[in-house]
Length: 375
Ligand code: UD1
Image (cartoon, rainbow, N blue to C red):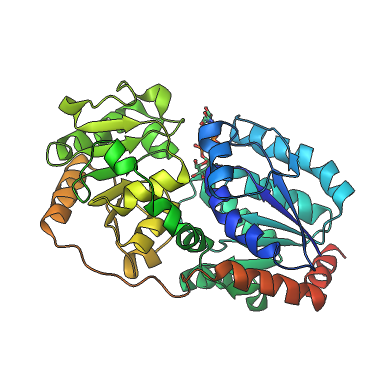
């Protein structure tokens, strides 16, 4: 069974790592890896491949940065001839980035079945590019692997056939658990001069929060106020870097923010694992803080990952400056509480997914479904 896996951006790399490791354990599977090149530099890509022990891609499409239409179109244009040549039995995509939807469309139009890992998540906010990518990818995928029960409910409501949906757990949790000894060995907290349990971590990169300088300034002002109570460490995403007046790696004590360059996977998980709290607008970090048992404040109005609120450590608080400061201070007053990970976030998601892929392939089910759709 030839499975062609497509990744493009930083969160994809984390998700594909346990899946490729599992696929390589099965002699019946030939896993191919395509990197679209959506993220391309050392900090956003190469370092993740090395730290997550992902083999070098078989193909790199080199699409780079661009508008949404350009990025999506370039992935489609460059992937199509490759799929025609490699003729995989299945294309596997993860997450919700532009590369995900582009690869899914290209494959189904060639009659190649698509498996989507991390299907069914919905913020119900169509102003988010990722929400469009999720809805479209799920609508055309043949196998949908969900991380939480709400995702299955969302898919059923959208008319997806129940027998194509599989509750497999969370491959982000697999990656975090598998690499635990290595991130526990990281010295990033000491190297940055921080005291374990006495700092906050901030990440921001959503267009809604960072593209409008007025919104970004307001949010950062609130975080500077919080920074008067405990240092706020801010590894800066390249999307935000040109919009920031604070220099990287400068303590910026008066502003309460310690800006760092983007960190590798192991250092970043280590930094979060020993933080007092994490503030973020990322999707994956809501899940990782839940796994780590670290309080998380999500600086958005919605989450597509409600299990991190019902079972985890997450609170969705929006971006009003007063609320950010008040909620941050509230966490400092609370004693940390233990949480159990959500159902099936147990380190075995990749195993369940690959088992299902093999079973479906052997039963000839995925192929049959796709061909029916093309009649
Ligand atoms: C993308 C994903 C988002 C994901 C995020 C993780 C989409 C629509 N968005 O957003 O879901 O959470 O990745 O990081 O797919 N850049 C670099 N080096 C790189 C890559 C990008 O400097 O290796 C810079 C470029 O200036 C680029 C900007 O970062 O314009 C944004 O990159 P892009 O891939 O367009 O979107 P992200 O904001 O990273």
